[in-house]
Amino acid sequence: MTDRSSPPPPSLAGRRPVSLPDLLLALGVTLAGVVLLLGTLKIPFGINAVVGPRVFPLIVSVGLTVLGAVMTFGALRGDRAEPAAEEDTDPDAPISHLNPAVILGGFLLGAAALQPLGFVIGTAIMYLSVTFAFGERHYLRMVGVALLLSLLTYLLFTRGLGLTLPAGLLKGVL
View (cartoon, rainbow, N blue to C red):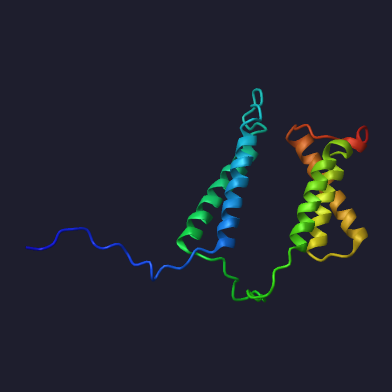
């Protein structure tokens, strides 16, 4: 008589350990997607609009949540984010937290400046922090490009999509 019991569980010896940084990043992406989704669901529907103000944030938040879930599943399976062969990186090099801190600080400062100074200036602060963190040191060019990009973004959202964004100091000019 043969044994018809289920096969033994797979050995954990061949399984790669979970990478904590990869798992934390994946959970952070998932959390960001869920928070954005909850905020998006609070946006009222547009009146008689096929594509209202909720559509694009909904697409982004759902996509971010799904991406985070896929990344979390992969990290729990032991998948690791490895640098590509063409990247000139040293995975064993010490990690510098300065550049992410500059970006986070710029984001927080820009978000705090949105209401009093307006969307264009607040967003320009965010753009400036990213370019500075990536090593750009041509300050006049940085400011010009940041202001131009944030102005174009403002016009696209206010004129193109009909959204209301704070004008701040530029009220009456825009």
